[in-house]
Length: 173
Image 1: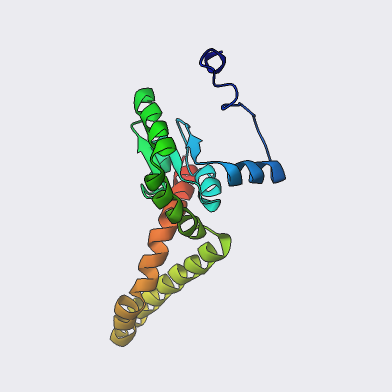
Image 2 (image 1 turned 90 degrees about the vertical axis):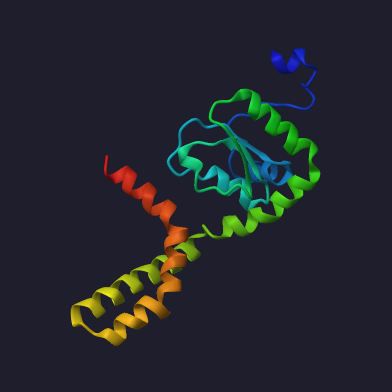
């Protein structure tokens, strides 16, 4: 009713749930994504939008803290006024929208299954190497693991922590 009374019927539509080709077409043709969830653990919606090069406007809730500000314009939780201001910014500030759009696909690629599996493997290998070095009391192996292999561990931890945190929060309840 509000959309109709505001003469926005030709610009705003509520389409409901979509899948497959129709969903891909909608995401590809969107200017940006709006995600107003009030509670999430590790939603895939931000990855769907950013995978299509579309930044998000969303509430700054705990479940979206892993989504960086470079790809999401976050507003204080449940602040409808700030949300409407953010929508206006994303619609009118084409320079901001363009910069954010450029960052979307590289962000989304960090969460592809092959990349996650590779980084998880690196992380496990580093952990195993550290345990072996400590168990064998081998200072050379320990030095290698703590200095040479550490960048692999840090990269894997940085990219995997949202997934690990999500898993632990769901299995510890």
